[in-house]
Length: 494
Ligand SMILES: *Cc1c(COP(=O)(O)O)cnc(C)c1O
Image (tube, rainbow, N blue to C red):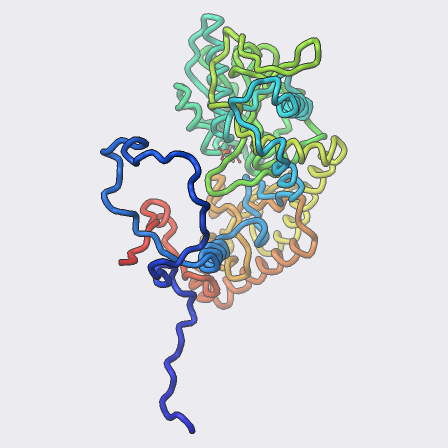
């Protein structure tokens, strides 16, 4: 027998998890409770109790797994593809770090445990403090801050405490116009007024502008070196002398130390305080807002102001929380920092060792220069010389055809690449800031470069392709400002 009726076309989209819900379906079964149960009112204040049960989907385990796996595929991470996000050091996160973090001796401990039961964890933190001091050329490190910006604020609070201890009221923090936005923000949060220094024609701190800006009210100069243009401040020794002569201190924004490890140290360049982003340089995961780790390191003159407790070692070799620090600015993070992140960074540093970390930096710089050299065939290069771990292009040539940097970034999505940083640093028109990191193969770099060259060709010959991008992604072009300001985080599922 044949049927004449055409069967309905099944929906190709995955069913929505709430549509799969049927009363009584479950994904797991919990054993019966074997401790006396309290009535809900005895556990939670009556005012906070629900009056009716939450409306959650009742589904099978496999449906839950498919739901979350499908959602995770709509996200982009360094395990999905190349992520050349300048100033962010989106390097691969080695799985070895995760194995170390999973060891039961680490994953099973509690921050309230007695010191003598967590000597191994304290030894790890103590060794990490010393390793980071050796990498940065600083005398002492605090692992507490949870992010780069948090490290900046911690550093500035120590600078404030230092000046106050000498009876000086200094009110101004100097930052170059190429600085990361967190620098002026942290300075404001620490109660300072920021003074912006303009860069010279080569993209470096303008020494005359610096000389004109420093004075008895200068608390500090914040600098990242190499700066956000990927350029090394060649006059760093002179810059340090100018600031120190005026009685100010030097703050090193070491969020991206990926160009200097094992080669140059902020401590040797004249900096008094630094922060590092372990979630950038030291390969611990980031994105989505954390957790991160932004340890701060200081020279001896600031040591007594470090957040307490530090991890110290007694003469008998045991480790302890060093709380007796009367001049400390206090605790900046509950417990002992983001221990799981510190542990991953430790695993990274130890698996490379000193010569391996140097090699990391050398390869990061080599990769960046390789890309810069090939891409300069089609894109303007505002500061055309050897770069460090990252470099900045300008989309001005493409702008002449009506294609903006934003359009180029959107078109990259069609080829499975995360776009580079765009429109930062602010001093470059239509800026495109690329940081390949050391962890990418030449094949990946070449594919990205080929796509970028192709987009430059499209901009000239078929601009609509670029203007309408992305066309191969889950959703078409979004209004990212609206998406960030007014995110729709729930579904109207009835
Ligand atoms: C990422 C970054 C920061 C801020 O670090 P967060 O951990 O995001 O707070 C500061 N400075 C520079 C140069 C950076 O790249």
